[in-house]
Image (cartoon, rainbow over all chains, first blue to last red):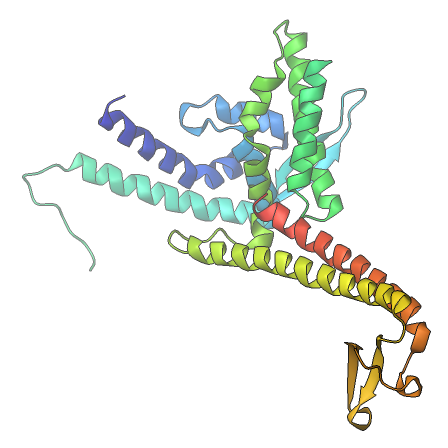
Amino acid sequence: MTTDDKTQEKWEVQLRKGSLELVILAALQHRTLYGLELLKVLQSFKSTAITEGTLYPLLDRLKREQLLDAQWVQEGDIRPRKYYSLTAAGLTKLGDLTSLWRQSVQDIEYLLAHPGPDPIKVTGA
Amino acid sequence: MEQQQMIHQYLNTLQRYLARLSPAEAKEVIREIESHIFDLIEQREAAGQQADAATILQGFGEPRQLAEQYVAHMTDGAPPPLGFRAIQRVKHGVTASLYYGMAVFGFMTSFCLLFLAGAKLITPDAVGVWAMSEGNSLTIAFLAEPFPPEQELLGMALVPVAIVLGLALMWLTRRVLAVLKNHLYTRHP
């Protein structure tokens, strides 16, 4: 593996870590999922693929912060599963993080779309 | 069945590392992970795939590291920022020296008391507890020239008293050590 690949992988890991909370809240928006189900959803996307060892402690933390609600449900003969859904606070948090995310993407896109040598328009401070 | 055993062992180890959580919280964590593992195995088997416990457990990582994430909010509130890990290490050191200090002090004192009881039995005249300076201080001593027996406080009653105190102290030390060890264990086994 070249140094470039390593740096790129590091950056990917950082990006995934930073956006993980938003990813989980988004996946649970108006939806109730149990751990394994949520994991499969996340693992089906290239940039959100995480392991069990990352997901479960994070769900535990989000629940402790009262952003998520969890409930054990048993349907028929299947073993009981713990289902997660957003609380009102979780939905608000999702809104906040979404605006931050979109702002960030918009800013980066702007920079990418305006290469030199033309001067870049600087607004504000 | 070997697979079952591997999963069992993993969950047991995890439970040990979760000792800091309340029993109900720890049970909840184990229950969820257990449900996930067996769910996944059933789903794979139903799909005609081979369900390999080792591969599934790999996704959860080492039990100790997994547990640390669940316990982090209890030990530190939040994981310490980089560069502050030294403080954690000092805290570990204090706990470890406290543990060994407690063990040495507790057991030494308790053995001394038991030894005193034995010595009183063997040489009753030379061993005893005397009140000195008009009752302002207490002396436990082995003497070549014994005090007059009437000044001795306990007489032969020293034997049962010292044995009871010695045993009680030993019991207490073991209890305290058990509590300390539990904390040591979850921090750096």
